Length: 82
Image 1 (tube, rainbow, N blue to C red):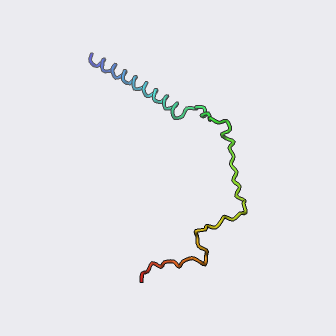
Image 2: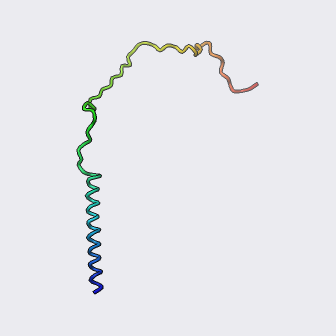
Image 3: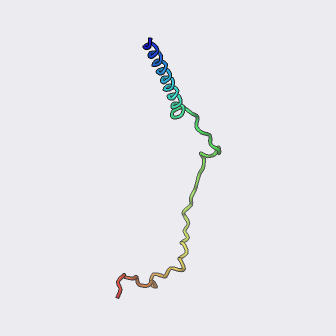
């Protein structure tokens, strides 16, 4: 008679484990692969943004007043001491 109670207990555990596997599978489908609608954007014109950069100016930049002219530069230090 002890054998019949062991068989019923194993069947109940198998039924519970099978139900948990199905529940986890359904949750995984909705979390990872469900066909959810795309998220709504807060701005209706989000896809129509345009940026234009005009780099065609012919004005030369002002020379830096602190930089010496080409001929007035001090000689470079060679790194050797006398």
